[in-house]
Amino acid sequence: MSATTNPDPAPGSLAFVPLEANPELMTTLLHKLGLSRALQVHDVYSITEPELLAFVPRPALAVLLVFPVSATYESARLAEDAGAPEYAGKGEGEPVLWFRQTIRNACGLMGLLHAVANGPARGFIEQDTPLNRLIQAATPLPPTERSALLEKTPELAAAHQEAASRGDTAAPDAQDDVDLHYVCFVKTEDGDKDGGTLWELDGRRKGPIARGKLAADEDVLSEKALLWGPLKFLERGGGDMRFSCVALAGALD
Image 1: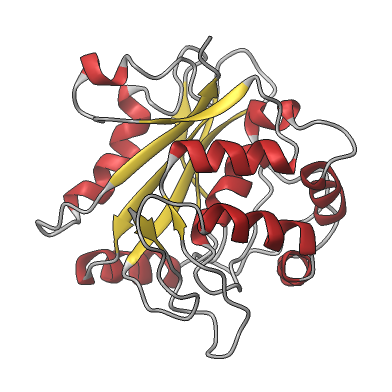
Image 2: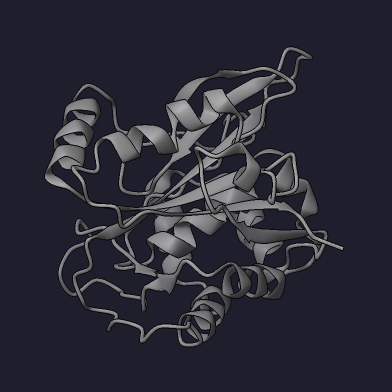
């Protein structure tokens, strides 16, 4: 399934070919950019059936959900964002590293960046790689300058283009309007033994959104995390079942 996009980037802005929600392609892209081969992207065949969730190695470090941008979802997003300030976080004190999306049709790439740049997954990024250099450069910058950095990182664009062109389905054009979008959920460790925070990370929002506290033994595929995250999106789907879900977790032997 191909997915995009944030309809908000201005016409004429930099555009990428939408990235297919294909675990193999995503894993190859992340490894090429510098993620350790100890992690890979896995299909999540169901978020409601425990026997199918069991196929994903645990703990899962991030979940990427592809969902249809319905009128119900847009109403809920606009209402929630209306009461939120524009995010201006930067530097080492940030609870998460968040990127605002300004590249058209790049929501899949944004989701992958959010997945590996936050929580325990960040410790699996290898030194002196494109991912490592990008995160080091982005961390001290405010959101607007981070977006400009992404637009001017040729290694990122080249790796994305290679992955997007190798999907199982015909890729849409970079300038196409596609009504599917990616959102990422990660759990950060909050410096105590009691657990961490579930974050919703979407470059189309005003900033990162803390959805609630998770216990130490709960990951992003735990019952509570799914209830606060992907299942909420399913409820707002309006009968449109074009949902797909993948998770970042340990590599299979």
